[in-house]
Each structure stands twice: as structure tokens, then as C-alpha cells.
Length: 637
Image (cartoon, rainbow, N blue to C red; front, side, top):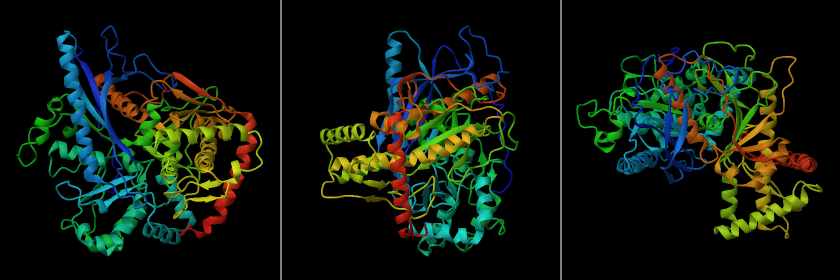
């Protein structure tokens, strides 16, 4: 097991760009319901007059400099494949389909770039040069690979969507073994509570299962999806491709303050009976090396900054050399993946934190298949928090993950967000857009008429617990399940759909309360923080004005949509993070900090309706009472 204190790779590699061409970054977004590749035009360290920007820029004031690198989505140069990438509840990743879809998305985007380039050449205008590829992936996600770096099978994959009974039992065994004090200490080190959605209990359940004995004996490493892709493209058969701090942090096994595998979590894993039984290291019987090395997402490693090589490590032809000629150049940099939540925050312009209480701190709210509320704090690895920021204490019910070596992400998440609506749509047979839209129209009318007269928690008293795939924030109860209560003969599909929408907003409201308190606690003593602002992202939230109004009313906070990130905030975040690293390499020196926020381009603002406050207070009380009533029936809750 890799237990050494890994240090960040040196970022001294410089790149030079031919300014006569349009430079492009390819951003790959691997989600739970789709995979997308988007091309972004990159404008780097050179100012409009051709001068190189000052390398002593300081972003600690949270203001965007005119010299900050820009990325702009290239119109029409993207490709999306809609597909379920995870098996619900089991949490297994459909890894072969995912890898094939990633390659296909790149195929299509490069083909579109070639077409665009031919059109530009006819007009005597610029050509295109791909300079980098970056990733975001759903997290937690780990995939077991063999000695050649190939996945050993779908059953040897882990994801955040796991709620299996055997994993829930492993959590309970660990809770009993560690006790409250050790569990709290581990939460403060890793930023993640003990829960079936994280890697440690899933790994223990996998290796204790005798049915996995044959496949376990073939495992050389557990890797991220992005690491597997880069290993395939590089053709380095024996190369130990690392995992980024960001992706590792979401496993719940990384010490986010120091950026090495947490020693206690590692000890529990490596001494698991199944690991000792199925794994043998002929070189060092005392160490079980199943977790990959750790570096930052933008580590300038030799095999990541020279494009795709023509040959594999064994001397055979690399198929990707002919397949993707645009990526042959030594100017092409390959980047490790970051967690989708980290990319979503950066892409929705919530990538910094105000240094005084005079400015509203931005909280990113994402509702896609899942849902989350998060904000960013500066915290350089190996260092305590610098004034005016305070040392981070991770609140119960929330997580704290590493974004990169200078920042962390604090927040909470729901496994089911937009998936609750999709489930209800299928259950209620609202397959056509017409029937679905008609149902939502009735729901909207119900809400408008009901929120000012809260006789019950919701119209007709229908209440839902939206834990269809288990519960994460804020309770993190293993084995949690969904429930609908209060149905009568008068209950209609619109009533059930209303309860589904309301239930997700109520849980987000609980997360938001903790997140807002955690954000406000970061302001120096004596400074009163202004009310935070919610920046919406994710298709489910951006496309539903009703859901945004519900969110504003439930939290008593304004909800805004930013024009630059309204389409694909996560993908944009990948491009922004890659651009920031390319920018540093062009300058040849690191920026002092990355605590900056881009100006918001607000295209829609939803203000809270004060008249609805009592309705949401009553609805939350009813939902919490229902959770308390049914929780004893959940396995090991």
C-alpha cells in the first residue's frame, strides 16, 4: 500500500503556443447518466498586445485579473452520449461501456474540429491546435485493474451509488470497532464520514466475499477512470499511473490536509482478511500495494506532457497514434481527473471565497442525477490555514474534499436529486413530454396556491423521503430507503410528483443550512457575513423554474443562473482548471494563490417568497417526523 507522504510534483515544465492558431482544450465529463466531450478555446498568459503577463499576480483579493486565462466553449464542437454508467444500489461501474464512450466522444469532437478547420482554411483564417485534455468524473469511483492496466471486471468497481446490504454491514462493523472518538477523528482527517458510498467499506466487502476470490487475485491496483484512460492512451504497459488528490479525496481514504493515504484507513484495508488471503506481493510481503501513487491533477510528469506516443511500452504500435493525430504533438498535455463536484464549483464561478464579510459568499447548488451544495476554501496542503481564514473543522453531516494542492471543497450531497423526478415520471407513466409537462404545470399551480396557507406539509398531506439510493448528507445513515406517506383515494400523479420535488428541496435545505453556517464561520471574528447567494447548475435545476423557486423559498436565499456556465458548468470547470495550469506553465512560475472568483453574468435571478416560509417550516417538520418513524426499519441505520 502506498503510505509514503507524497509531495506535489514540480510544475516547472513550460509550454509554448503558436499564437497564429486557435488553441483548444478538450474537457471530458464522465457523469452517472452521460459522457460528454467539449472543445474550449483557450486564451492564455499573453495579453492582447502580445506581452506575457506578470508572473507575480496575487489572487488573494478574490478579484478576477484581466490577465487570468479565459476559456470559451467552441460552438457546436461537442459530443454527448447518454447512458447509465452506474448500476443503481449495487454501485458497480459499467466500465467497458464507459471507456468506449469516452473514446467515441473524443473521436467525434476531433472530427468536428477537422471539419471546422477545413472551413476556416477556405476562408484563410486560423487553424486549430489541441493543447490539452482534462477530465471530471463522478466520484467516489475506483476500478480494479490487472498488471497490464486493464479492468478486471465490472464486479471489481466502486462508486458513490453503492447501498448494498453487505457494504452497510461492513460500515456497522467498523463503527462498532472504532467507536465515536476514532470515527470523529477519521472524519476530520479524511473529510468523509464512514458510509457505504465511500471506498473503505466497499473494499472490505469486496475482499471478504469468497465469490470474488478469483477476480481479486488478478488485481494489481485500484485506479480512477481518468487514470485508466491515460494509461491506455500512453501505451505504457508497466507504468504506475497515479491518481489525483481530488479523485482520491472523494474515496474517503485520503488525508485531505496532508494529501497522502490516511494511515488508519490504509491499515484497516491492508489487514483485511480477504486482502491478506487473496493478494501476494512477492517483493515485499509486509506491504500490500493496491492503491495508486498520489499527485495533483496537473502534475507535469514526463508521460503526461508530451502527447500520445507512437508506440506502446512493448514496442508495438499505439492505435491511438493513428486514431487521434491531433494529440501526437509534444505540446499536448494530458491531465488527471478531478471530482465532478470540484469542476462544477469552478465552472459555475464558485471557485473562491471572499476575504471579508462585505461580499456575499457563493454556494454552488447542483442538481443533476444527484444533488449537492458546496463552497470552496483556500487550504494549501501540508500548511495550516492562513489569515484571514481559520483552520477547518469538518461539521457533522458535511464533507471536505481536496480540489487541488491549494483548495478544498466543503459541502453535502444527496445521491438522488433529479433521479427522483425521473423515477416518478416512469412510475406514473408520464413518458411523453406532453403528459410530463402537464403534470408539472399542475404541480406549479398547487405550489403557488398552497405555499401561503400551510395547513399541511404539502397538498393532500403527501410526504416523501427521497432516499431511493440511500442517504448521504446530512444523516449518512446506512441502508436508508425511500418512503411515501399520506396517500388517499384522492391522491393524483400531480400530488406524488409534487411530493418528489418538495422532498429533494427539503433535504437540500437541510444541507444548505449547515453549508451556510460553515461558510459564515470562516469570516474573521468581529465581521458579520452577508447572506450567501446560490449559484444554480445542473440540467434538472436550470431547466425548472419551479424547482429554483422552491429552493429559494426553502432556504430564504436568492438563486441565480450564470450565463457563462448555464449549459455545462462541470465541463467548463474542467477547462478552467486545465487553463489555469497551462497558464502557470507558460509563465514558468506558480501563481501565489488561486482564491479568485469570476464576475457573475446573471441571466436569471429567483428571489425568495417570504410568504412561503411557514409552509417550508411545516413541511420540514413533517418530513423529519416521517424519517424518525421509518428509520428503525432500515438495515443498520
